[in-house]
Amino acid sequence: MDDTSDTTQCGGADLPGVNRRRVALGAAVLGLAGALPRARSGARAEVATPAASPAPGGDPVLLGCPYNLSGAYASIGAPARDGSLLAAAQVNRDGGVLGRPLRLRVADVEGDPAEAAAATRRLIEDDRVAAVVGLTDTTFVLAAAPVAQAAGVPFLDVGATAPAIAAVGDYVFMLPFGDNVQAAVAAEYCAAEGFRRVAILRNRDTAFTRLLAGYFAARLVAPDLGGEIVADEGYAADGADVAARLDALAVLDPAPEALFFAAGPEESGTVVKQARDRGLPQPIVGGDGYDTPRLVGDGGAAAEGVVFTTHAGIYGDSSPLAAAFLSEFAAAYGEPPPSVFAALGYDAVLLMADAIGRAGSLDPIAVRDALAATGGFRGVTGAVAYAPGERVPVKAVALVRVENGRFVLLREGAPRHIPPP
Image 1 (cartoon, rainbow, N blue to C red):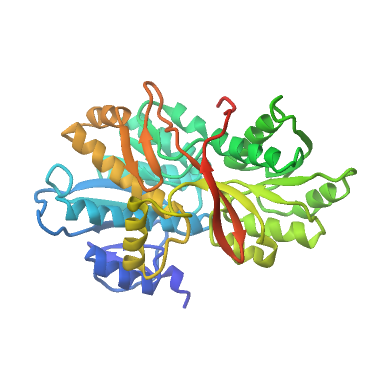
Image 2: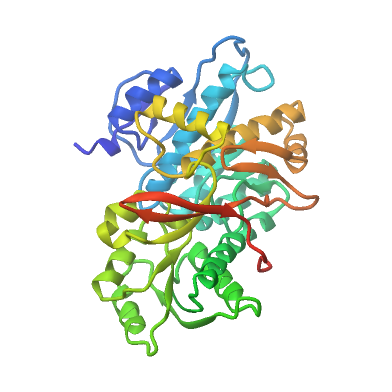
């Protein structure tokens, strides 16, 4: 039996996507117990996290947490879910929210944008959650966030990076930086390394990859960098024509000095491997879709030396806050976070709990206004502050390289210039 499809029961509902070892270790920290039935389609879970003193009381505060726990995006959705659970446990140890216990309703959106919208609607209409915190990819957030906006329910995007997300409406906030920021860091890295003639390969069927590649190109060709995009090849989401697109890059004359591959987590490793298998030797640079064990798991030795941008927090010399998170995560789940998306899931629940506390009630307008007024929340992935009228924080970007199969921090920082969203 495939352990990754096992579930645990909490309050009589299934939690998909947790293997047996993670259930056992997570239950010890989160106070969960139960049998391990097979996952059922569209399962949701109410995850209660009993508190230590001071004990919260009264009716729980419910947060809806839609995540991709099965399907192609599970390699970043499941770690984000795990980080969210860890944060809920911490909130309850510290007295809960408004003196009440915090509970997460977790929904598996199964790699389907339509299900992301439907699950968000169920969480709001059936479960009556106070706010929605979840999702890690632009296509899914752009499907789900309008549902929350229409209902007037605060929505905090955990890991999707398209600046257009914040334009959905005034109830929708982003925890991560925008793609224009991480793409600018990648372009400035290429220029600093002397890679001014760059070829792009992008998944043309997902919003994240299209936008990331576009922002990268805009920054690289800016006058201060003086770069050139020598080719821009797009492949279908099912990957059927990746080989043909790579062949087109292989015959470029003169050859590009570097390759920028805009790929999602489900394909990053395989695309890198195919590039190397087809004789493309150039340095490969990508975005935070590479921050998944699948990059090395699927790419093998071909992933060595790949550089990508991602979120700050768990790489390099960690801050005391990040070090505490890493220690608690390992204690809860028996292993380090598999990607930085675990830290994003953790930060997002803590930020929403903080906003509800500052609002002093569950009134959605008050919570929305408290989120908008956030000015210095300190998370594992960096400080979060929203400028007046803005719902995308300005955060540092980590530049990471694969070395001996491990993700090694090169540096953190902000780009000199950011393409407009």
